[in-house]
Length: 419
Image 1 (cartoon, rainbow, N blue to C red):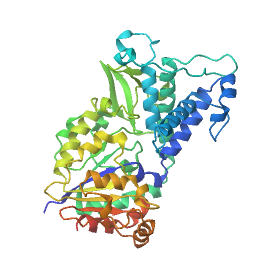
Image 2 (tube, one colour):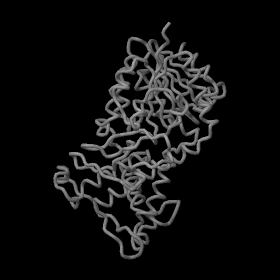
Image 3 (cartoon, rainbow, N blue to C red):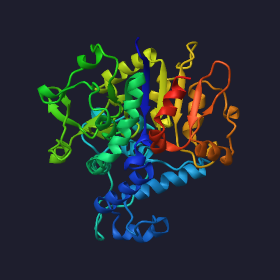
Image 4 (tube, rainbow, N blue to C red):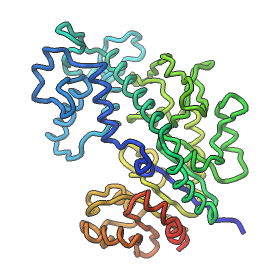
């Protein structure tokens, strides 16, 4: 008998228990990188001490931009703090709006109506340099490549025991289901836990991506890195770049060799040629390989899957393109959706659950007995149990005790998926 087709969607919450950085850690990394490479000059630091961050008195172009964004959001009544993708989005836009860079064909039409405010000079000493579009492009490169390097470093330090914990979960799932995995994480934890899934790369041909390996395969299981991977390397090719898979994270990647280039789109935005997708440039990058193939295949996986397991994915605003792909999942087939999440209080603070409720058609959070009730959440956590949507025709189950505990109770996940 054919196994049930299970689609697994993994996000950052599936990796943080195993040593990968949170959004807060990435912001701290950006602050550190910018302090070293893009400090404000001495006079600007004196004038802006009241805006200093908690980590260091040395102000940077990044921290100055971030503080202005925080202040703007607060003035507009936005309670969320910007994350690192919000910040990279701003940097990318700022690199396009100033008119100083060469090649007018990249000057966006928006520049006719929008002006960029004045920024403090950057550099050590009193003789600072004015900030222009090239400065913002260089800052974006510094942050993006620093981020890739940090993920590669952390992946290289993950102990085999952590991989075995993840492997044990997927071994149990594979015993009951045909499993296909899509992830928005940059790390290689899932690849190491389930190493034999088809990803589209041909190791016999220099690790180059070949879309027919995904689109023409006969077995349903696969692993799609929707936002890139620490193992991806973009190298020059005829007419642009080609993405390859590099097994050795300590190897010589193209960007690590100092061969860093910038890409412009028709809107004038500049972004580093990167093996990962960051900021809000996801829709543009999706038009390239392997992402074009991955998102084409994602639609088929969503359509053919018979159950969905979400591991620590928030379906957040930065992933609108992905969230919209799942909007029709709760159809007449009544497919079961199981969400693995970590909640420490009431669900008003658990945004991934709130979004899952909206995306998968379970109405409002009011059906959850633990809504705004931290004690109820703790009861489910202590019992290692799922909270289940009982609305007619809606099959949505929530686990509140995080990814690490979920791995230790894989049998409960299987039972819930098959319920």
